[in-house]
Every structure is written in structure tokens, then in C-alpha cells.
Length: 225
Image (cartoon, rainbow, N blue to C red; front, side, top):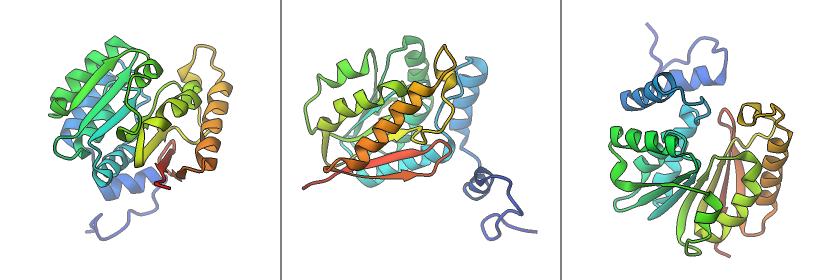
């Protein structure tokens, strides 16, 4: 008998197969959140993949931000991972312009036992970000309107503390984003993501790298000097 902890799976067809074989299935709470949100509430299946969620939790645990931000709540799947990684007393604010999604996210955060450290804000993200104190946020996760990624970068960069992390999902600009617009033409999304990637890669005050999740994360750290 083989053990997935000691022997690799035989000829996995996709990297995701190997990842799941080694890391094991998602926990029951996350499974329940997905079933309720996707099957019972028919939310769009555009949440982060499981390994990306684990990475968000890991980055949060390593950075230990007193304050974290998320742009794009959806039903709260990524917010749960970030909240799980927060240090004692740390708080996450997650922003979405859809009140229905925000209501479901609040319920899912309660189900996951992390609602006490998360504030769900309904409204325009760039307008909300403009009200925050500069250099006051230790970690920011962007996973919302892809066309607005350059605008989110402009709004988020001043908010980062020294050594703060800025993480963007769907960073592989060759992905399929047609489901996120009515026209079915994702050229604007692709162009905006590419512009974001180029900007953070060339910014003198950021150090950036791609992380190879299913859709790609771009992780940037604000340099101290």
C-alpha cells in the first residue's frame, strides 16, 4: 500500500492533482462554504483555488499584519483564509460592491469562526481606499474587476506599510476572463492585468514575483529603502 505522504501519486494528469494528493482535501468548513455558496446560492465559480487560499493564509501568517485589506469579497472564501492567518488583534477589511454577495460572505465568515476579526464593507473600493491613512496596511489582496487593476494599484500603493505585501489574483494575463463581462470579450481585462504586472515589476519601491497557482498570483513587497 502506498502512502501519499511518502510516495508521489502515479502519473498525475495535472499539477493540481499532485497538489491535492500531497496537501489532502480541504477542511470540512471550507467544503461547506463552497457547497452553500456555489450549489445552494449559485454564486459564480470564480473564487481562488485551494492552493492559492493556503498561500494567502501563509503570507498572512508570515507578515503578521495588524491590518489587512481585500478588494473583492465575493462569498468570502479568500477572506476566510486571510482571517485565519491574522495575528492576535489583527483585522481584515474586505470590500465588495454587491450587497447580496456581502451578506453571504458575512454568513460564511460566521460559519468559519472568523467573523470577529473581519469587517465587510459594501461600496466602491477606490472611494473607500481614498479614506484610509497612508502606510497603515500590512497586507492587501486584490481580486475584483480586472479592468480596474491599474486603478487599484494606484489607490493601494500609498496604503502599504514598509515591507507590506500587495497580492493580486488572476495574474496570468493569458487567462480566460470572458465570464466576468457581458460582452464575452476579455481583451480589456487581459490588457489591464498586464499593465498591472508591468507596473509592479518595474516600480523602484516594490519587489515582485509571480506565484504559480492555477490563475497566478503576483506578490509584491514594498521596499523599506
